[in-house]
Length: 454
Image 1 (cartoon, rainbow, N blue to C red):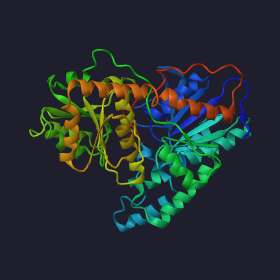
Image 2: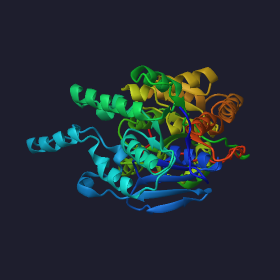
Image 3: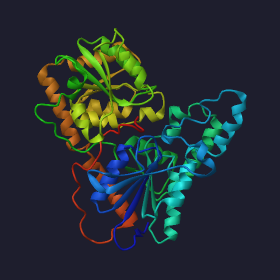
Image 4: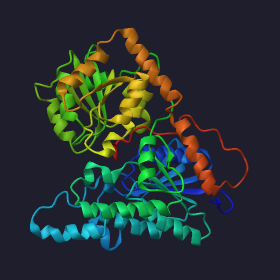
């Protein structure tokens, strides 16, 4: 493809996020990398309670997040966090709701159409539209077409952040309807100028499902390089009031169903002098805080609020072990490599992962970065946790060192972003031949305190 040519001056990118992006870590990392390469960058997200309609990134003022309110006839169908929308048949109740379900099916994805309408009217034209997920790609294609009519390059990148139609969110959708959804996504993907995704196994899956001109570009969800201070931080014990000898098992991210939180809580009770610490947000947060006060779990189960994204490495480094006990009951889960996995390794914190989470398991076993267990079996989770926590001090130090070494090199954002920046340079011609500024080793975000984390 011949590169598009931007008007004189800086190239402009719009990153489309179908949630509040308060923040959404992957979009912020992409935005910071583009800004460091000379782009003007806007993250176009959805309005939500407690977040401003516009804000600048404190670490990169060239990045602005604008949140757009849904409008038009679909406004009433909108949700504050459209990315968390479940499948249209997930909550059918009384028979009178079948008409609503039919409308959702025909106009899928209905919950974001009001947001799309506002974007079409208000977003300034750009040279690049980066669509994060299936809820953003249709409007990105519309915006790209409009931008080309206005003299901008209008290239579109579809970022397949998860294999959403092969996930639990759509497990209850009738097969003919799901086949139609897949057909629609395939059409959107073929209309995009490029496809990126989060790891090689998902890229291979997409290449088989959508025969396209080129294999998707892999942009790993890994984190920027980070060097822990000496001594390592101890923020969790200090905040939670835990004794210094208490071993800490950390769960990062969204607190909700199908995260293995109940099994992890039971497993930690089987480990001597250990506590499970949940650092995150989500619908289960209040219930988990109630469990904190249960005498059976007192001092062994702690729920803490999410922290600012750039602070996540220090908090993660305060734990002894991290746990990813998600049940692998969909293709999407089996192939996932979520933020929490990379955040743990980047902080030098070994991980226990579910044995059927095949991509994470392969990385952990190849580089000896943790242990593997059955996430449905608290006894087996306890065995894996104990194998790490009870190891001799020199073995634990060596494992931490391996985590840090692999993420400073092969699995760092600075390495992962190179292919993506080359891709967008091929889509939108740089305005000058001047060399790209060196990537800022700190120009990336960690886990988001609120939206969309697997």
